[in-house]
Every structure is written in structure tokens, then in C-alpha cells.
Amino acid sequence: MSSRLFVVAGPSGVGKGTLIARARAALPELEVATSATTRPRRPDERDGREYHFLDEAEFARRVEAGEFLEHVSYAGNRYGTLRSEVEQRLRDGGSVVLEIEVAGAREIRRQMPGAVLVFVAPPTMADLEARLRGRRQNTETEVSDRLRIAAEEMRARPEFDHTITNDDVDRAAAELADLMRSAMNAEEHG
Ligand code: ADP
Ligand code: 5GP
Image (tube, rainbow, N blue to C red; front, side, top):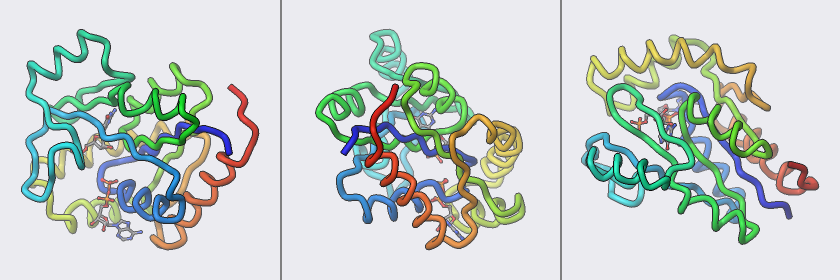
């Protein structure tokens, strides 16, 4: 079994979290890196579970200290992948998945050429909007910001190793789990 770093990117609301949760159920050896963010915690979120919630000063301190593998500003907040969530697990021979936006995925590709990059696309932009609204997590302003960013993110799709269209959730989750399993079973190169 090879140690692999997977990146799952794609517009907010496309179903990345849903697909990763299902793929993990099929691949218990896969670990999810918990990102850090300055975004306010939502009522159903727990510090250290969905994210490490940091204030601006603490996030900036950690950037300065080189603790992030990548970090971005997205819709007015900062998000980043902590080295401590990834590097030791990979050294120990584990596989890790990052659920991040497109600019972060690009940065990971630059730093870790062996990473497997997966883009999750919505069947249509109307489906994406319906999912963002249906999740009921974002205000109207947040939804329109996220849709505007999504249109831009869709253009990055050719940079990824794989694209999965999240049409039917069972089918798409099986496709993600299959490609992860194949990558973990393949010889490592790079
Ligand atoms: P992301 O992690 O990409 O922001 P989520 O996993 O939170 O997206 O999914 C956004 C919403 O869309 C959730 O309410 C989820 O239940 C729903 N969803 C996910 N996949 C599908 C699908 N294939 N068909 C319809 N709804 C979906
Ligand atoms: P949300 O606020 O909905 O939790 O996340 C907003 C966006 O930030 C999503 O596209 C999510 O995948 C992305 N994101 C979450 N964590 C990280 C991270 O560590 N790095 C980057 N680059 N993006 C992240």
C-alpha cells in the first residue's frame, strides 16, 4: 500500500465533504487533514473537528512560523493546511486527503508533485446553486460570493488529474473511492 496525498477541490457546495465522508467509510485507512480557518464557527461545528478555528493574529503567527503547507484568502476569510496535519502521517506511510479550494490545490501540486488532484464538478451551475442554498449554511451574500468564485474555479478543472461529476451521490462516491484505492495500490512515483 503506497502512502498518498489526495487533494479534493471544487466549488463550495458541490459535495466535496459528502463524497469524502463516503469514500472514507469505504477506505478506513484514509485520514482527513483538518484545516485551519479564521471564518467564524457555525453552530453545528466543533473546534478541531471541522476546522481548527483561529483568530487573525494566531493565523498570521502560524503563517510567519511556516506552519502551513498552503494558505489562501477565500470570501473574506483565511484558510490553510497545517503541515502538522499532513507530513508526519505521510512519513508514517499513511494516506491523507485535503478538502480545499482551487488555489490551494495548485500550491499543493507545486510543492508535492506526487499528490493526486481530484476536481469535483456539479452537473450544472443551477444544481450547484440549489445545493448551496439547500445546505442552509450561508447567507444570501455568502451564496452569491461563492457562486461568483465557483464560476472562476470551474476554469481550473483541466489542471486536475481527475474530474468527478457529482451527479448521483452513490455513483460519484464510488468513483472517488475507486480512484483513491487504485492510487494507494499503485507503485509510488514522485
Ligand atoms: P462542499 O463540501 O463541496 O461544500 P457539501 O458536501 O457540504 O459540499 O454538499 C453541499 C450540499 O449538497 C449538502 O447539503 C449535500 O447534502 C448536498 N449534496 C451533496 N452531493 C449531492 C448530490 N450528488 N446530489 C444532491 N445533493 C448533494
Ligand atoms: P467553508 O467556509 O464552506 O467551510 O469553506 C470555504 C472553502 O474553503 C471551501 O471551498 C473549502 O474547500 C476551502 N478550504 C477549506 N479548508 C481549506 C484549506 O486549508 N486550504 C484551502 N486552500 N482551502 C480550504
